[in-house]
Image (cartoon, rainbow, N blue to C red; front, side, top):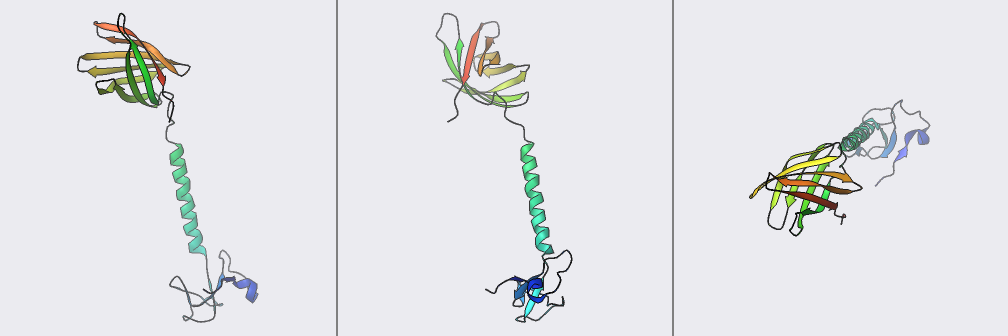
Length: 179
């Protein structure tokens, strides 16, 4: 491979304004005909040649703008809310053992979605909201519809659940530590 050297250092010429002339040994750079010291095209295999770096700087500029655009786009994505994660929960029923269940929640602002899982089934949460620090959701299970509310206090959920007029109780949940 032949060396690249700045033309104006070797020949004493002044660089073209807005360009970075390079001295190339050989007639082409990546298949592109090169210019001689007078700025005209030369034959392949000729003497010293110069090329202008404007196309390379343009490509570099486009790449930098694209990278900046991607970074700005990533920064605009909403940050995950405090409810996002897996919650290990217990439903308390008077006169019965506590019933464990798991909530998997995704939160962006007041918008929350997720699933309810117990030992028998995994069900989607419906009518989910998080307003003024209160989580509210419904679960349509095979044995009926459940409604629950809870407040997030010190990283724990605690609140009330009901199954229409049939049953009700309290519940609590702790966020599972990230693996």
